Amino acid sequence: MEGNIVQMGAYIGAGLACMGMGGSAIGVGNVAGNFLSGALRNPSAAAGQTATLFIGIAFAEALGIFSFLVALLLMFAV
Amino acid sequence: MASETQNTAHAAADAAQGAAHTAQKAGMPQLDFSSYPNQIFWLVVALVAIYWLLTRIALPRIEAVLADRQGTIAGDIAAAEDFKRKAEEAEAAYEKALAEARAQAQKIAGETKAEIQKDLDAAIAKADAEIAARSAESEARIAEIRDGALAAVDQVAKDTAGEIVAALGGNSDASAVNAAVEQRLKG
Amino acid sequence: MATLEQEMRSELTFHPMDQFIVKPLFGDGPVHWYTPTNATLWMAIAVLAIFFMLVIGTRGRAVVPSRAQSIAELSYGFIHKMVEDVAGKDALKFFPYIFTVFLFIVFSNFLGLLPRGFTTTSHIAVTGLLAIAVFVAVTVIGFVKNGAGFLSLFWVASAPLALRPILAIIEIISYFVRPVSHSIRLAGNMMAGHAVMKVFAAFAPLILFSGVGIAVTPLSILAITAMYGLEVLVAFIQAYVFTILTCVYLRDALHPAH
Image 1 (tube, rainbow over the protein chains, first blue to last red):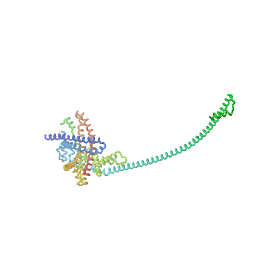
Image 2 (cartoon, chains in turn green, yellow, cyan):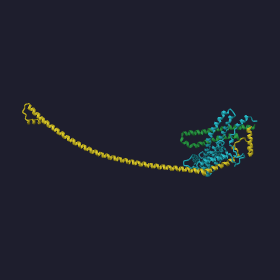
Image 3 (cartoon, rainbow over the protein chains, first blue to last red):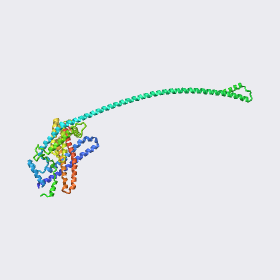
Image 4 (cartoon, rainbow over the protein chains, first blue to last red):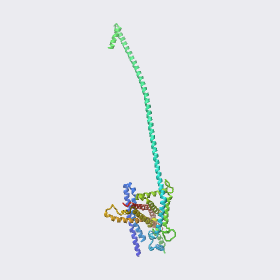
């Protein structure tokens, strides 16, 4: 019985952890959207900033991946 | 049921490996530390193999090809420049020849024109002289005719006057009549 | 004891992580450090693919490249330019290692997308080693090149004096978190995509046991297709991101002053 409660808590925690991925989705969308609006204002400067774009996306995405990892750990490792 | 049996089977396998995490369910394979030495060892082998391939064979070859291509392109561009220069030279020569030919033509045209003008002038002069001669001749004849006519008028007047005098019954003295007519004609 | 229905339902079990298990290639014994495993096999395939692309592909040494040769040259030019632009000209002597890492990651990612493939880069052990190698190398290069001047990386000279110690602590923490995020980003992305595809794949055979499957099966197959397309993109972008972050860290080591 106790084990079941622990398992339930773990699964609920995994579900909650998945909310972090939504946050990272907002972050990634923000980065890409702002890049696009800037690029449309000044298309000639856009090509030189794609590296920065990807770095920004990677940093924003990494946090979502962390929450996904927490969910996985709760599901499979706890 | 089935998952339970699987768990027990897994647990048995884990126990066979002597690993401590027998209580785990499926678990994350990424956190199965017993496989780490294996992966790290083979990763190092793979990286060394790739690094060796790159530094010994691939990179020098690609660099050589790129340098070669750069050289070829530079050579081609130089050759193209050369051809362009030659074409420009040829164009300049052509322009020069054209200008010369044009000058020549203009000179010839001028000469011909001068020659024609000369001939024309001569012809015109000749014609003028002829015309002058003819008109002088004509004038002379006109003068002659007029003189003739005047003389005739004189004669006719004298004759007419003599006849008129005779008709009026006078004694016509020819010389007096003539003198009177001349007197009148002059007057 | 198990009825037919129970047996059928037991078919719909989810093992999204089973694809990542490292198993010996031959037999069922324990995994020693020297045992040839499926990870070994797929790393070897990656090395072989790189060999085919970069060595066999360029053997013509043609001035006008063949298709394979131009792929090799494109990848070379791509990373060469990245290293030069991001990390500076003096970083070009580390170019072979960066190119090695990029090729290994990009080939492992794409090979992992093959059905029944094994994604070596989905393992923390692999990406962790790659990231720690970069971290240690960058730290060593930083101190060798700049001596104690490397520490100016943590001392933000443009900030107000009062803020600098706090910023220094934050910078130091973020410096030591680098290998963690560097490795988990790659492994997590790979793991996540493959696990999600596996979850969708587990729904796909539902049509065999249940009427709901008529709706669920086509949807899940569509979802797998869409995820696969996304994963193809992610496979390249994660290799690109790993490489470009390596270049960024290397620039910090070579020119610590911001």
